Image 1 (tube, helix red, strand yellow):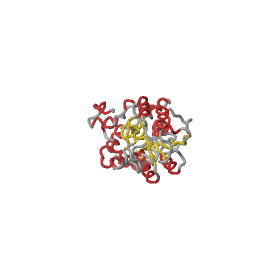
Image 2 (image 1 turned 90 degrees about the vertical axis):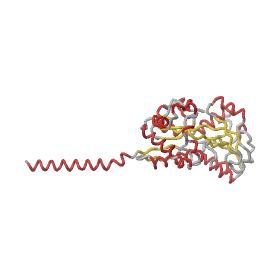
Image 3 (image 1 turned 60 degrees about the vertical axis):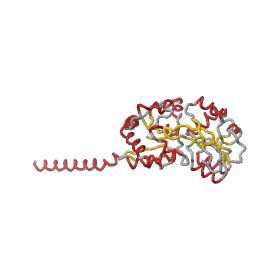
Image 4 (image 1 turned 60 degrees about the horizontal axis):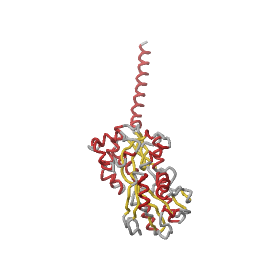
Length: 331
């Protein structure tokens, strides 16, 4: 009898020890949280910013590993977050309003911040007969990749509103930013758009290889755009930004949103935004436009966004003393 008791007790102790070892060995992997950060084309600003933010987060937020994912940018990033397949991402102002109008449940995402701008670059070869966007009729035009705000907002909506153009007026090519520069270089497209923050390395490289021009936005077209879309902001790309561009280029830009899934933990989002914003030197070294990610810019244009800020972001802005003053920074 005593032998049986000792035997069963021994088995119980061994079993409990094994369970304890399994629990302890599982803890490190269970504690590590893996997040995807949706960016855009490797030739665009989204990719540089997302990869840079991911690196800062990985180095400063314990238990988190963020992977920057190259995607078709805004619309795809937002869709992936809504479907629960991505946790963080960048998207152009106007993207969520479009998806909501299509019936998608945008309440599954929240704002983290508004930061940089995506500047409109309509690019042609210098010798091109195209002098205005109105001249696109009958031409081959790179309009951005499927699933991008470049395609859905700049190329579809803005061309129609500003210049009365639809895709029936020209031959659209659904290509990425890197394919746009290649198409201009190889003369396989007549014009193409890159909507990303100037200066762009890919456009700088193209301008060193061949003479190019940037097509301006006429004042009347800009007026039509701003009457329809309140987030359209006039912009001048200064002379000398790109090789051979020897005069200021009048164009426009849109603010960009940093988004996350609504169901992310409050403290996690707080730690993420705190890490990025408070490692200023590392952040600003990512790309010239990373400097635009500061609390004073975080609320620009957000009254027109159909979702609110994530509680983790609100916690950080309250800590910085700016949340209750945010209406002063909407413009």
